[in-house]
Every structure is written in structure tokens, then in C-alpha cells.
Image 1 (cartoon, rainbow, N blue to C red):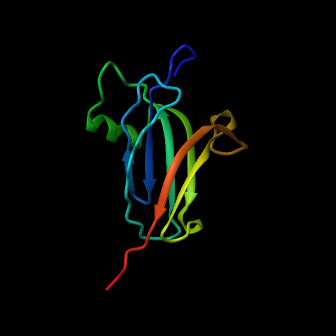
Image 2: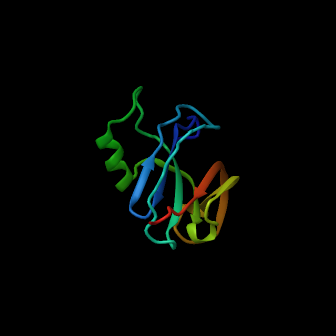
Image 3: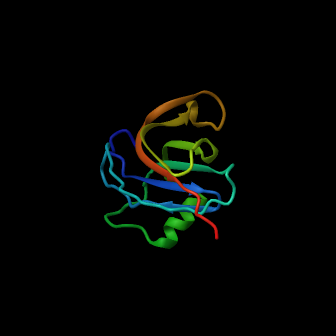
Length: 132
């Protein structure tokens, strides 16, 4: 995203090795993703990570699935912020609906002080299926 450009945000949700990408919301500073996702959790120590990116590849149409998949592993899009929720901090069979801060590291590095980059309204429900 350059300074004269309105972002085209999308988000990626990830738990363990599983992830889901929202559609891109074109030209929005206040996007609504309405993404519903369910993940199988194999380790309670896993984390839900939500990353918001600016889609720098839009040329009037949605990208192909191949483009999206290759972009997830080697992102060219501009990082806008992230949220990490350790699943072991959530109570079973409870829904959490909050506005969470999106953070990014100062200077764009992986270490150092983090700063708030915006916020994300999110509902999370953690449940354990019954066995037997």
C-alpha cells in the first residue's frame, strides 16, 4: 500500500497447520469480512492467529486460488497487523466476542516493541466434541 492508496484488506486465520483466507474488501479502511471458520484443534497449546494484509495484486478482479496459495507461503502483500490468541486461555464451550487490538512490530521487524495497528471485532467459540 502506498500513501495515496486506500488498502484492499483481507485476513488469514490460522490454527496449527490449517488456515483460511477471507475475500478481499476493496478500497476499505473499515472492512467487514464476515468470515466463519471452524478448525480441528489437535493440541490445546496451539494458537489462533489472525493476520490482516493489504492485497497488492488486485487488478480489477479476484486472484486465482493458485495465486492466493503461493502468496500465503511467500507474502508480497503489505502487512497491516495481527492478533494471536492462545487457545489454552479460552474456556470450553464459551463464546468470546470482543474488539481485539491488531499489533505490528515497530520498524517492521520480528522483534522489538509492538504497537497497535488497528482493531478487529471477532467472535471465537472454543468447544471440545463429546466422545463416545
